[in-house]
Amino acid sequence: MSGPRKVQPLRIADAALAIRHVFIRNLDVLAHIGIHGHEQDKMQPVRINIDLAVEDAAALEDSLDSVVDYETITKKIHALIAKGHINLAETLAERIASACFEDKRVKTARVRVEKLHALAGAESAGAASAPPAP
Image (cartoon, rainbow, N blue to C red):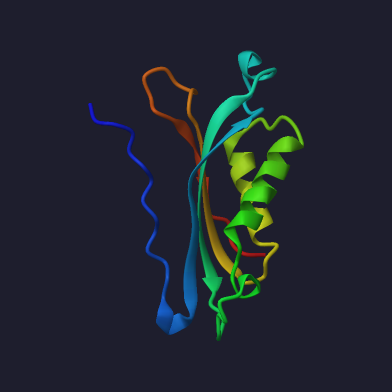
């Protein structure tokens, strides 16, 4: 058996349409997540992957203000998790996608949430969400 397989980024950038691909790959966090009794009072390792299609700035000007900042998105993820227990990976994925859409330049969001210790014998189990932009 080989080592853990990493999620590969989607190819969603399109210069002709002025769309840039912004991603966060394999963000490992601890979260209160799960519906089972043994999941209620402990933190679990969760891996999050995000792929965003965002409007490209006409001129980047080498300025953080001209791009969707993945560090800001990461801080939003940590804030969502800090709010408390979430029952479903699907719920966390939807909430993360909604947080991404707070930046109006984000046109599509694909969020994958994996619980790393959910199933014996499996590397992970979870859900992916790609809701439409509001």
